[in-house]
Amino acid sequence: MKVTVVGAGVVGTMHAWQAVERGHEVVQIEREAEARGASLRNFGQIWVSGRAGGEELETALRAREMWEEIGARVPALGFRANGSLTPVRGDLERAVAEAAVARPDAAARGHKLLTPAEARALNPALRGAFDAALYCERDAAVEPRTAQLALRAELLRQPNYTFLPGREVREVVGEGAVRDDHGDVHEADVVVLCTGAWLGGLVRELAGPDLPVRRVRLQMMQTDPLGEPLTTSVADADSFRYYPAYASGALDALDAAQPQPETAAAHRMQLLMVQRADGGLTIGDTHEYEHPFAFDTVEDPYDHLAEVVESLLGRPLPKIRRRWAGVYAQCTDPSRVVHRQQVDDGVWLVTGPGGRGMTCSPAIAEKTADELGW
Image 1 (tube, rainbow, N blue to C red):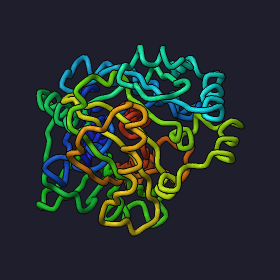
Image 2: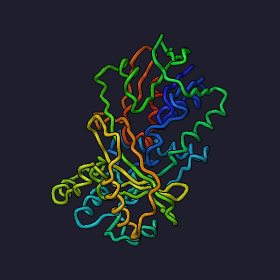
Image 3: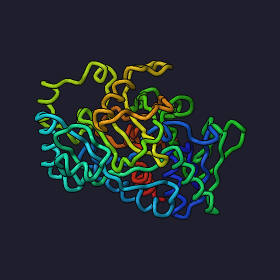
Image 4: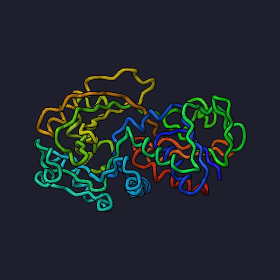
């Protein structure tokens, strides 16, 4: 079988990976020299802990297993099974963590409630004050800025894979055939459009104006090296408000009695933090849903995040060396893991995983391959 994959972000690359692994001839087309969207502008977290039960959790757990397998084969991914800690303060936050541990699927996530001493034994860098910490053993991380390059290098070793950068696919010209902006026609048995948050142009023409996917903007930052290991990923209790796994009466009580600080609420913020291979910290994030998005970054959210991180580390934050914004695509129905739609003869669109794209992409691609009979 011949497969054309359009888009070289993590979702597209995992579709190419699946097709190559199954012995098919694959051409992957990317409009940039390399992907530059959400696949690079994220935490690199394989984030199981906050996923909803059912299909979403099953997808995340399967993807976590696949990431570990791929990481063993491609060490340059920087895969590490580092787990995560969410420190909590006060009875209200602790009650949400306790409710998460009491869920029937808590064992599958590796959720445990730790004392401060137990949490610091796992992550000695957390010297700030907190009353307990929710631990998720199944969380992991890769290096987002280099993961696509590492995967691509491995794919390029295979004789049945071709990468064509700097080309934008403009039209479908037949069943399984597309033309790019160089005028070249690429014929295949199936085309998979994995264009991420790029939902205009050909995607709009094929899927129509009512595509059930929205774009979400976020802001993040990265610091100089911390100077010591941050051995787990770290979240704050505000993250409970944004992930479906934490929905409970205890969360309702937290929202009612302890609303977010004004800046955090205005920017729909949570703290997520991961240490990079060079020792720096990737820190975020915010959420913006209203279009058109602002073209500039806003400083107040960065100030808020810095304060939260310093309170957990019990020390000043290293110098911030870069800030950025990114945009990802999210299904408007939060219960859907991804939007997968046949948009023309032999042409499928796969988009909208939202903030779980990095986490779930291997399993999303596996399911596409299974459904399409690769």
